[in-house]
Image (cartoon, rainbow, N blue to C red; front, side):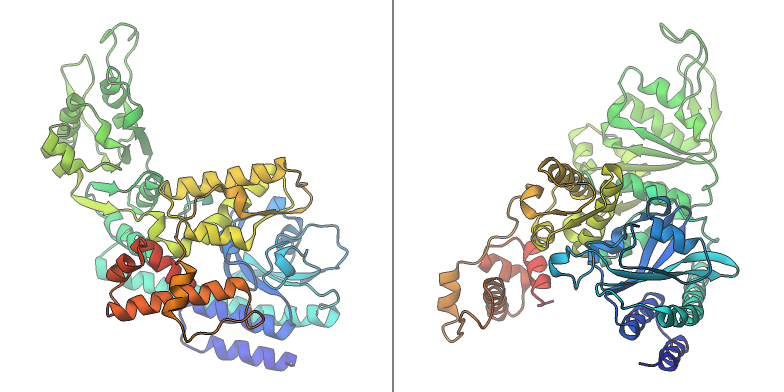
Length: 517
């Protein structure tokens, strides 16, 4: 493809009506074809971090990574200039994508050729564009010049995507009579994922954030309820005021009242001076009551008064004063059952759950597991000082098959533990360190169909060595077995799961992985 053809293709995509994400995906695919390289990535700069927003040729988990610019000298060099930069195959600077290129054998081959250019929008750096190749000599002076010219159209595509996103947001605000959002949250509080179930919750969160309604976040341990509370506060009109976090389960019953509402001097032994409570600190902002189901009944009555009248009374005082606080609560318990058991006040429950918002467990977010794993891999690469940290295909497979009863927190701990084990077993920090499945210590999540039973059910199917490898043969048998169960049940997935003696959520995972969904 000639340089003119590249520019014509990029221009054609610019004038086509496309969703923002698809527009940028088409850009990176066009560039990969033209420059005959292994991977192309567009990364957006967010303070001191570069976040991939579109990529082709990289492992899926790379989209979940966040690259600290100061820790990646190649990315730092690209971001520091407006000119396109090429790194020679023998460059001593580590490549951030080592071990992440899909076309490399086993993903272990280090990137050989690399070039990139910074992207500017309205005179300010927006991000960077990188191109990587496994074959030395792929890039030369002519490709550098071509990239310099093409970058103008890439910037135009980014600008077009931003305009489209702003238009959709403006329409949403006008429809819901809302106000513009606050500034973006920093990456330490970022909710990572693209699954349909997560997007649904985030969309709901955007709407309720602009109200003053109390919100009750419901979800299993480890789903990240605190992140959703922070996101709700960030999107609310109170975003410039404090967000005060209280772990109700960690409050000693004897000190809970003082901690929440404050106390006067002499209110109890050791109270040598007057002290304001957490509600005073949150005045004008948001109070996040984590594990609210653990609050003692006596404190529940006082909390109800705050919700009803906006009034608090310090321990030891006979006077009350008003505070303006929005309550966001969270629990992993079934509060309705606790109400029936008399452990939680019914009136407080109804006040807190004006808007209940269930947070999906990780097992219902299949598409997010790889992204989250990539995010945690990059965090551990930074903490441990490793050149590159990646998952083997078997490890990726194990992560997708596991049910994650501990949710995102368990995934984070699993990746961290496996990274440390890899180093303790002799891996060097200046190598591309691969985490294999056995380092994850995960039990098998999906029972494999009995091969003999499958063969009987598929007597007319011939599997011969050489026509496919063992892994492909097992996958084909699984695929046919599932299809037979679906056909037998009229494509009722729940009934098919019962016939196959597999958990329904695991059947959906396996079917997705086998290309049946």
